[in-house]
Length: 409
Image (cartoon, rainbow, N blue to C red; front, side, top):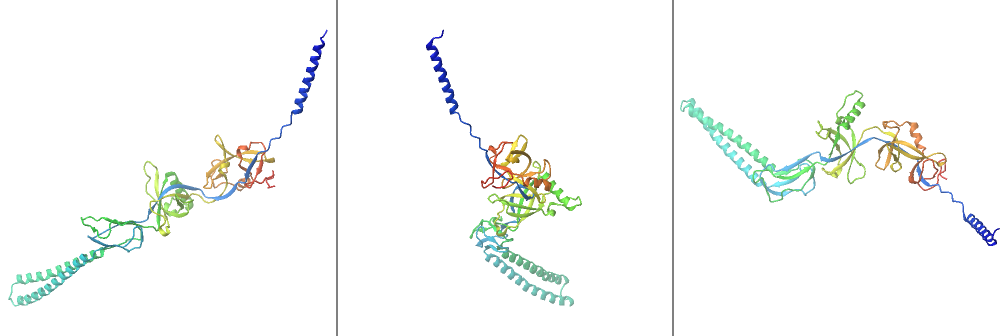
């Protein structure tokens, strides 16, 4: 027989459990649907590109002249300021001309004295010649006077030559610029004695600034490739000299953006450097105003192909999976798909070139392949939020939504 209090307690417990269950069921709410992640998409770009090789080089003066005195003397005048652009034949240093003029005058005076003595000797010869015919003098005496008169002729000629040399010394006392260009600092100032100890000290250095040379080292494989390109252009299988190909190039200083200066290759050395396998190549470029200074480091870019159409995408959109590279693109209903790519070189503006297929030459890239990429939507921003085979909400670069058909809403 059951106890009445026990039955009452069991009833109360059952009621409380029912209320608890009812309360729990009443507090539960349906979960909110997850939001579709937003991503930025863009079409790949089509550009006309040229394959290029980049090198590090330096500038060289097309001419360098060390200015030295050819005669001994005291500097009377310096005709330039340090760093000036000097013209050809412009006065640089003037040595005191008076010692040279004195030497010229002295030599000319001695020549005149000898000329007077020669006239007297010739008269003596003529007198002895008459006496010799009359047997009034000996033949030996006549010959001695004749030789003395002829020696005056040689001595006068020597004095005239000495005068010309002194005139050259006077001319050399005026030291002029042998070439036009930028001159360095004067190593000696006014009042200094030049060539005092028998040496010829350096007075200044002039470098030609127009044109200017661009030197850089090219590896053996690249040189062989340039020769093959030149042989292909001739159509005869011959490998022309690099200077005959007239290969253009561009270059820029370290502080400049891009490669704003242009030039042409004019020379390649006759042997490769042992140990490095490189060869010196020289280009020539214009240098108006002498703004480019010899010795400056430059970045050199040499084109190695004809122009071709290429597909480019932002390099930040390229993802890596072990040994493969791929892009995330939009499929039907804005589903994220993976598309494997064959990446090419990275351009200066951060865009990555896409090649048609692994190992293909960049001159390939059929029209159909290019068109297939032109209509593709590539995810460029929000890659970390996109999952393959899951939908996303695509936005253009301005943040405007794009529908599944790829049109801005």
